[in-house]
Length: 639
Ligand code: FEO
Ligand code: CA
Ligand code: CA
Image (cartoon, rainbow, N blue to C red; front, side, top):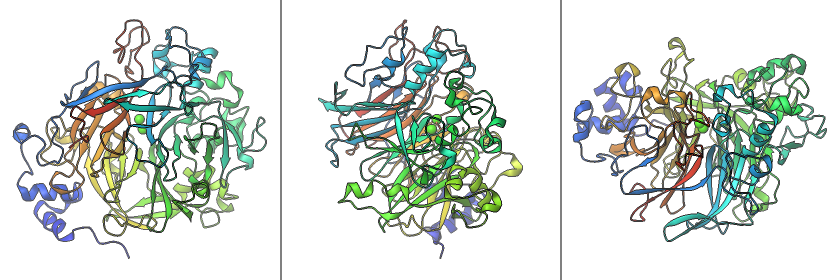
């Protein structure tokens, strides 16, 4: 039986008072609480008159909400650069020289465009917050900020062979050991755990699609041994201490004649084209789909690796499906099954859930290592009445049959997008992070934006068309907070907030009405929760940042109580950057964030970047970097 709406009496009162349409438009109980406490409708000019933070439990003074060359953080906090693109990872890494980049050097140095961050405590299994492994995705390169003569990120097709070779080593993932001493985090030089995973690292393939003919290539007739992972956007951590790194926009690196591939429609669905952003296909045959039509099928997966074993081979877990995975968040259900939430980050793509067949055994790490190979992948279908259902993607169950061109579960997984569309998954407004709140067990989905959605094609879960600022929805598995059933087929859902500037009525933003002038955000992308279950939202406005006039950064808010959806601006990136990878240490006293692509702006180049953060050296371009945020008094972030 579907779960009853939570706290129905309160919600009904509010619905009656503010009108059904407005109640359905979002905010759930936050709006309710605000209404009853008399703050709904506070005029903009009066907003700042409220006590700092009230009624949020987050009482920090908000950071400056203006675009600048450097970063900004709430007063009373420190933001220290921990590791930058080009800093040493391997013990024998050469010193960073931005005027003489080499593939061999880059293979030993911290990669470009840091995204997802996992802090993995040392020793393994502990809750150490002073020593651990920092596992960081490196999503792509800004060639125009790495070399002279490249005018724009969208005009990188004149990259030469040597530059492509560097880019292939700057993608992937970086692992470093870090230690906090005297309140300061430092990278441990020469750590045996340090490693790079790049576009040429040997990776295994497991699950139903491993070895399938559509994964076999001339170089790998087994279909089980891929070279590399790239376009690693967000990710996740498993309860058994491994890291999930997700392949997102893999299409940018492929080119060639789709028609020669025999899979033209299939490849088109994933955005593969004759030419694309990064011309790897010009120099490396396997990225030319006319020459190697199956190579793209080997990307778009969730990759699991064990950071505690630096010699372990990462594994592509095909049971989780092949899409442009933003991230992969895990949760152990009451039954012991492991649930993985993931989303396909593109306009009109879907949200997925994988539930393992086996059960997690906290006492047997080895037995957990292949849990992600067997289970059920489903796609989310949202209804306008606030219910939603997970629709399984299982070969043989109509319409996923030979009649529709599927010959096996491997086919269903390789073509997960087509399968999702056929069963009726709901096309969403670029779904990015999907994360489980560890305190209440609800699931939060960042929907970054959609310019393509027409007003006539809106629905309750994607209520604006076009939707240039994005929104956040909350999924409610059945059961009470703290004991929700993540394996159930039917959930409920609510709108949490609608982003954009609430001062501009046409935008249709919806937050807690006590929002300050600094509290509004645009394009939620990644998120994290602190120990109290508060939501921290990282934003990525892309090329709209100058137009919006606010920096990308991090906003915190309560998810319950009178401060629900009252977002407050905590950290701002340097100009041109987006914020990724928010990750707390177990003690909540350090918050790591990834400042990605500082200086990425139209016309900003290696020779004339709009910022040179973090070095501010006339000879050094801007460098993506991980920043460690701590409170000056050493206390928990946000308290
Ligand atoms: Fe790589 Fe969805 O951002
Ligand atoms: Ca992202
Ligand atoms: Ca992003």
